[in-house]
Length: 414
Image (cartoon, rainbow, N blue to C red; front, side, top):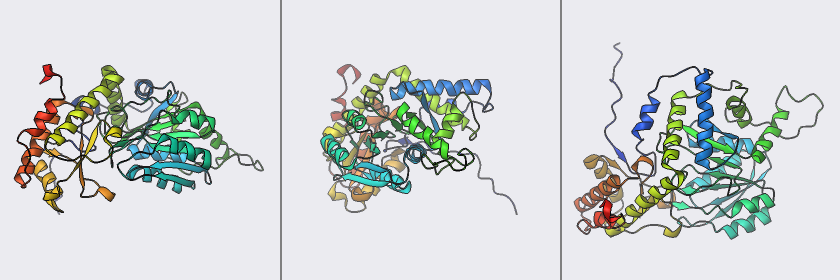
């Protein structure tokens, strides 16, 4: 039998303007193509140290334990929760979209007593309500998503850290979709554990999860080392429960990244290079400048879809800078939203997102993040969307989207 040879990988040209992943910055792709070295080569370990330092800047923290978990952003989420939560712990999760439900699910798999605070999709959970729940539930962990791309909402965090510290609550945040495009201050906001991913505002590919841990979180994780098999002497009373995962055991991952370099897994070298370049580019531009760029182009996209006469879903006052949920015109009918998305991809090579859960078939999700938070990407997407709407029979103002978006940009940039 002849073995088929499909030829080299050759994806079609695409502009990824959905909720993520996004078009990778070419400089990150170039970094990924760099040759490998051994995982304990002095150059490699020095590069790992550089990555740790760079991500302290990205997270706005002085946390010594700032590193990467090899895997998608969900690997970082699971590593943090499985390492912090013991069976029976009370965990409080504000839920305002799909990814709050994910945190609740993972916490439940850890054996936690999960308490949720739910609001309708399109809203955020008011900080006062979170504060009341902390006083009532007395959780061990507060687990919060900052930006939930399923609804495009951005949860306020700044007032929660002091309350968590007052009640001895570990404060964890999933910042996958928001870090780099929305204001984020790990130390200033009193966060104990934060995880993220590269494939949104950081402008990279999925496959590496930056993590930062406060000294308080590290102490909780370190305390669980003493119950590991072979360490606890016979007859000792356990001081906790062994971390159920080997790969996601952050105590072991910290030893791997730390000065002892204890072997845990083989580092995903090309992803390390990608993560390093994502952070390097972000810090070279400046944290505040990157957030301002996402704010500008996100506002231009928001006004552009409004200029086409389209509605915007949710509480816009709490919208993430980097994604907008656009209400699908009723005139398109049940399958019309997918038809427009298909034309966008086929005719223009532009991908916009669909949705799921209670928003399935109701909204498109359009992202302006990372490398795609730029004017030509915004204007090109709006022009293509206008044409595809016209082709499918939806009357929209001629040039209305591009014109409205241009009105957001400084006059010298038009």
